[in-house]
Image (cartoon, rainbow, N blue to C red):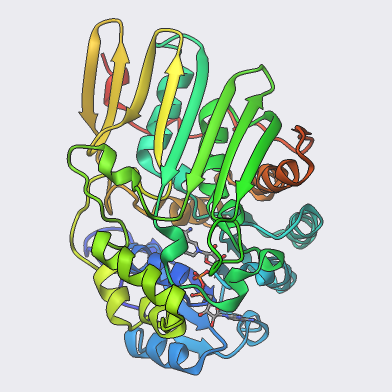
Length: 428
Ligand SMILES: NC(=O)c1ccc[n+]([C@@H]2O[C@H](COP(=O)([O-])OP(=O)(O)OC[C@H]3O[C@@H](n4cnc5c(N)ncnc54)[C@H](O)[C@@H]3O)[C@@H](O)[C@H]2O)c1
């Protein structure tokens, strides 16, 4: 997408009916924001017309990349722009509620990064602000939107493998070794693996199991003195019908889940030597985390290499981990480019056409566009996001109280969700 400010209609692909574009703006053009930019650029339906960030260098780099876009120094200024129709909120977690409510009150539709908010009170206010102002609110950018996860859900729902019996999701990542700013090292501001990585696994588990979990028993771990935030959790969850789930995320980066598949290696953000060097520098206090983090943001070299590479990477068990879904008569798990389905006939592997690669970040933009422009339903709405946040919070509460937490804000996956997703396994 060439970034053209205020283009109502794109005529790209001449001979075709012009596409109505959605004028989108980003609040907080940081690392998470940088991960989304290529998907926004690639979608003809999206006109990324503005960005807000408190850091001047970032604003400068934003307009360098998108010369026709507008850069604002605050969310308050951005939401006053009458031409912005929707905002993508990727500011630090402590601002998610404030920025979402601000945008809604100015009549903007909202996609908010995970975690949706720091607590349920904030999430409730966000839902209410969207309702009161008649705008859409999407709790976005989790791995549950990826095509393999959605295909797994379609297979489970089809009943071909019998009833869903268990879900196990285990991640071993180097998340805790990546550069972090001060707010990310503070649990009270939404720092740590449960807040930051929990939503990926929890959203996925809820999509696969129908949405409504009943209870959580969990432990969290904080094992690294240089990182005063939890870098580990293990949790046992149950759905309302008793279906059991385990989920684990170890972000300390010794063993990596990617090593578990034949096409994977001991590398995620960092290879073995880099992980050793990062740990040593952190222990010695010589690591310049601010510079490392800024390098991942817009215009940095690491941004270019990691988020803007033309490479098409296969799936490996990275931040989301290894997902194994067990039904009465079979199991499902990720393959290199799609899924393996184990059933009474043996093992089938099939690829899934995934635009933008396995992680593909288009789905939430499509859901936003379809909801706002085409009037279709929003599935990952505020109440959906609130239910996922409730589980995240329950993981931490259960760990603190050493007891099982009962959930009260769970909502079901809408019945028509993804009904048009093509899953080759279901063709036969
Ligand atoms: N879904 C994903 O895969 C994913 C990946 C990375 C980050 N994230 C999410 O993105 C969010 C930010 O994390 P990050 O790692 O990108 O951190 P970051 O610090 O790189 O990004 C935050 C950005 O917001 C800017 N900012 C700070 N306060 C602001 C304010 N008041 N108004 C406007 N801009 C402000 C900062 O300057 C920075 O550029 C978090 O919610 C995180 O969970 C999601």
